[in-house]
Image 1: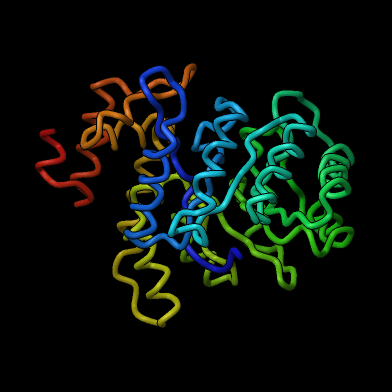
Image 2 (image 1 turned 60 degrees about the vertical axis):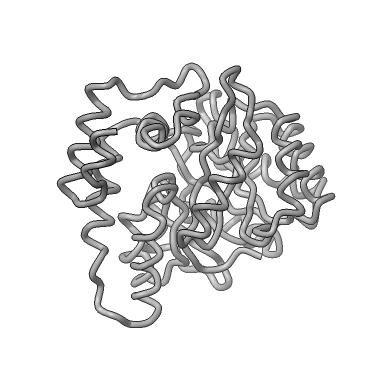
Length: 294
């Protein structure tokens, strides 16, 4: 069961033929958990989820079901189609996954409160035991949840709508609901969110800032003076200057060339931009000279 903590929207590791490298994807997630994360969400937007086939997703789900970090693994669906969302959720629930990060369908413009409510309502009506974390990310879905829209869903489905990942940042400061998990989508909002009563964060960049983010979280929980929050925010804001998926894969590819594999139309940073990124991170004491020279 998902609870308060620091989570990553996990990266998907690909083979050279751009199929999903299931073992490497799980290994990356496991390492991030061992480095401090409370959990990983597979198949969020950072995991290139809409570009990965349903069959590959199912293969990974079947494999992580028996992994030693099973209780730290969570799922997005990464589909636009209502029926494909239903299919992947039903499949995952056979392996006892119950909680899913689900974004309203993207691509078609003009998403409305009514249409988005209908999307979640139909999914829940088919799978009444599903637990859903709403994914509020207007930049990708073209729809931004209002407080009223979230409240309506929670009132209609109090046992199903259990939280929100807020990557549009219009909800986490003011929306207060009992027994409702609120996760800002950036670790730059982690401490502020915790101070406001949020549950932690679910972030792309915690794939690499895991230890820093966990330190900030633990120090808050233990009422210890913060020593790493400024560095954490600066690192996140540096990555925010680039396409996050491109920047993260470029950063990680310095140590592991497998991360150079990325799904079209996404591309890695240019060598010039990669050096620029690494230089900025070195100034923040986030990477060493060895990383920079690699």
